[in-house]
Image (cartoon, rainbow, N blue to C red; front, side):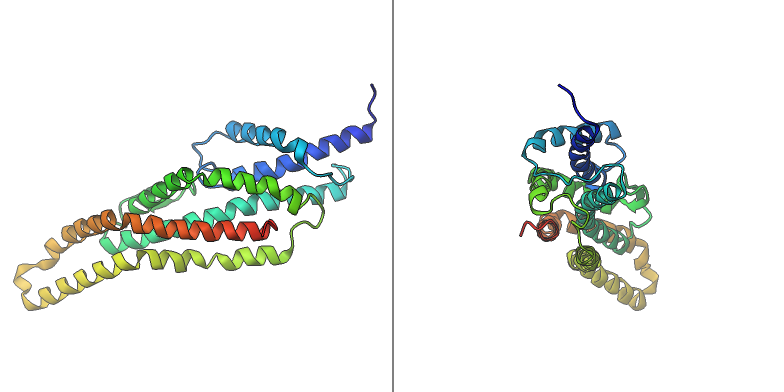
Length: 258
């Protein structure tokens, strides 16, 4: 049995293009994109998923992988994979922004650690909310749902030169404002409570300066903030699940699944 060069290049392109879309998703998806996950594991998962869904994929374009059209198609697959994971990164940033707002309100903005996903210093309270959100994301099989949506996207958004439109990118950029709006709404109850406590201490300091209320106000604010986080953690995660649902809706619209 002999194969022509065009046949071998066509078979290679039919495997490489889906692999690029899937591997780009693993590079940007939350939980799997952290530095603690080895790059070798991401590549192995991408290869495994590509091998599984390869027999079910529709017919690929006949362009040469190393031609100009082939490079354009490759860039399109990378953009699609990165965009799907980036949308979920924005959903997790909602919890990160809410945690930072709560931490600064309760006086724990100085207590920070390196975020493994972004590599920057973030407050410990924000890390607590992000870790809780990650566990909820894995508990509801959000990663499996995203893989399923990406596998179905090869039928609804086939591999082509013009598969992703500019309007899809603008829709994703417009949704990024939800990071600030959603994070503020999630942290607003705790921030408002701590604000009233600080106002009460300010009034007390004017009424009785000799008591030095700010000396005891700082630890009370921290303890009250921890208590409010413990009480409202379920509500925060419920709000995160709503943001996660909206993020999946945006992904389904971008992948033409709905």
